[in-house]
Image 1: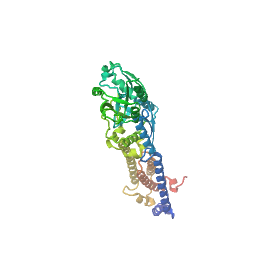
Image 2: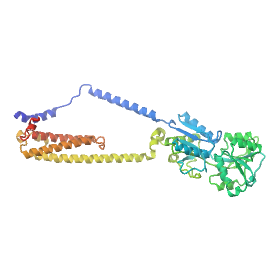
Image 3: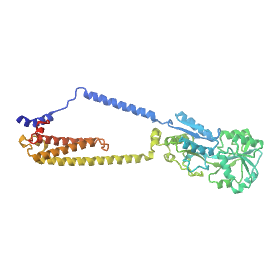
Image 4: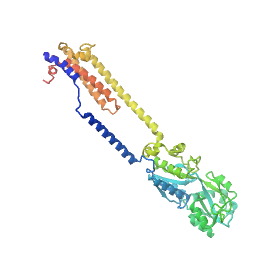
Length: 488
């Protein structure tokens, strides 16, 4: 019996003196394992970077650009942009079209198929409100509305156009829309002007043959196609003294001038400085063009057109349904350059715009703080319950004693009263439940990383109290099975 009573004290001493010794080479093996894991993580990051294009190029640009007639300014600019993108691993497919009207229609249709696309569109063109189109900016140099006539044909005012026949380009072109708008004015309707649809080269040829009086075109005055038809068919620019009055009627028109000899100095073309109407060109994107692709196009335009940043953001746009300026374009013009994330993490900005990253960080911070608060509240509840049970354990012997002192008591101080034994068993069961609850919290999804140590510390305190109870009940005459440590 004396040997049995000495067992708990001997066990405690052995437990205190027990040390875990690592086999030789264990530390070196762990260091090598950690080094291998770091190298594997670095390789994974490098693979992720190469997969998602963490680099300063246009590899993430995959879109179509609706331009205009081949040889025109829209198509020439689009070809330059596509070539620049291709040099830096981007793909910008140039799609020739009849003009701005067709561009708007095709751009909206591409949005319905969720195909990312952009278009160059003449200002003043009607845009359906439900088309889902947004403006990325305007080109720095406006286009000119030119009326081409034979060299010996003179027009002084719009009244001289009475009964004239004018070719206004393809039906789906911005030129055709603009000319129809101009001659829909009540005073010009009475002139009986006949408007007809032709390709630019066809209507230039008809003017030179006398089949048409004028050929209308909206284009950059230095476009190669325009220079070609002026030289080939010996045409000149028709001008009108009352042109400023017409320009003032339509807010999407401006007034400019083409100097004498701009197209030919030997045979002066134009023969004099000619005032012309000007109209802006808008860069438009559909809803399927992602942020990274939009920023890439803005970067291309900045690289190819030196005045692009200075001309933007547009102060106004007079499209029939006013196009909103895309948020990506607004941020780009404010900074004058793309965000760092747009340059190196284009796949990430497509998921969430950098403007909203701060809200994401705030939401994540609030979430983590809430989780930490929940975890600390649960920990407080567990700690309160453990302390209450420990007080009850000590009340069974001496409230001022520690667990070590209680475990060192002689066997005569063990619990012998039946009620005390029943109370001790109840406390032990509650401690067991509290420890299981603690273990559940360690594995809980709401427990922040690093808080597990607090729960494990509570578990160690619960285990200490449970060990003390086991020793108190070990020699209880009412619990012979505990005294032997085996089931009867």
